[in-house]
Length: 618
Image (cartoon, rainbow, N blue to C red; front, side, top):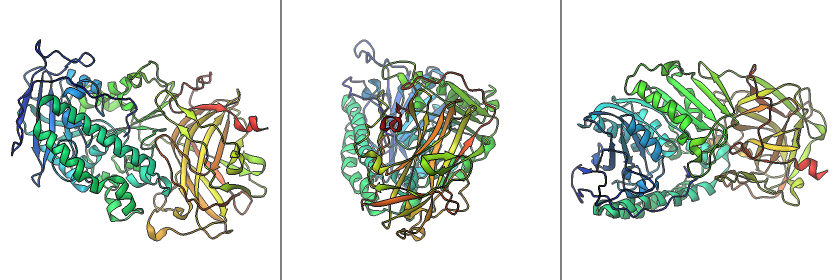
């Protein structure tokens, strides 16, 4: 949701047939700039014609749209970008200066392939009418109305697909669950499937830092739409943005989460994955393991779909990798097959693809487009099967494959663990604090005697005691390389009072908290309790000679997530005796040929390295 590249407001005026304060949906045609209106230097106009206006929803609310039409007579197949950022302003002045939430180059590629690209702002956002309410049921209903309205337009051939990531990925899940008849396919990237556990409270731990920053980013996107409207003299749009900036405050997410700190009916409505079983169209899903904005959980919405109509691509890296050209090539083939109806063989594409050790191969703001994996896994059907591998925690900070032993290990709480920073071009570990060893535990395996490829979620099943009624735990998986460098793999979190598990959804490799108010319970000081902590989905190739490490500490910053853990000081102990077998369970994919050379530290996107702190502490 937070776009990593910086954007600047544009000042180019584009000639438009402005129709301000129109009481009914209208079209306004915009032709590309001519000699009197030279194009923006950085983003030449790539569409043949632009139409803007307002489309109606079932309750009369009008949503701002912008259409970019390709060359040719038409009518055209359509790809929709629908969110609360700035899609209703695509093609405008700011957009042509690359001041937009999504990818101009993706739109360019779609238009070049003969698709009309339609951007729609959600109600109460940008230039659209209505009251803002993030992920309300009206969001999907409006999406259905928009798809059916688009299908009836003279420039549309009635075949509609949906694309893009983040909020625009959520819109696809919400819309497709309403089953619009003319929707042919969706390609959601990096959505919140269950907003509470995927973003607001991962593992039940509050993460307000991201929400605060996102609200500011949202207003920056409306400023982009405002810049385009000012350049075009669109007074209706400007007046609506001004209204939305005022009325949206009553439902701003920080206020919502203060009013709804637990999973109640209001929050459950934002659980899109509870309705994705209604989706019947083909789905091309993209997710990023080290996603700094929405983590990789995604509510596991993919598991609710027909696996024969799901194609899943997973990768290491950043939230904006939907913009990569390697993904874009497959995305257009997907739409060509299911929206255009081309017999291009896409249906033979493996239903699961996993990119590992991906790195950026070019500099600058377009670097995400150069993303290239070092290793690719695939499987013909979803899901990809895995073989569980268990490590038991044991004395002297060891992860062992036989039984654990020894007295409990403890750490002072809440001394936060080190942040893992995911900023464009500056992935890094936070330097360790002078007293860091008081606030953390580490367990390390023996060196692998053969290559091991880990994949999927993992589970840290810890028997713990506390001296307080509650505490928040963070676990971090890393690889210890023979060169003494430690590479970040993945993290997971759990509020101990939210430790009760949903038996219908939990598996040995994936805990699933019930996360209901009635299932939450305080810790009894000194009494052992099993805390199953979900380590977010990841994939990693361990080469022979590497070791696996598990860190346990207090939640800290992770990318855009800044956690607010329980603050009452205390002591947390982890047990690993015969009666309390704490363990780490990971999934593995056998039979994978791993490149012999270790990747260069600092090149693998969102997986920073650091010198082994335990070696340095000795």
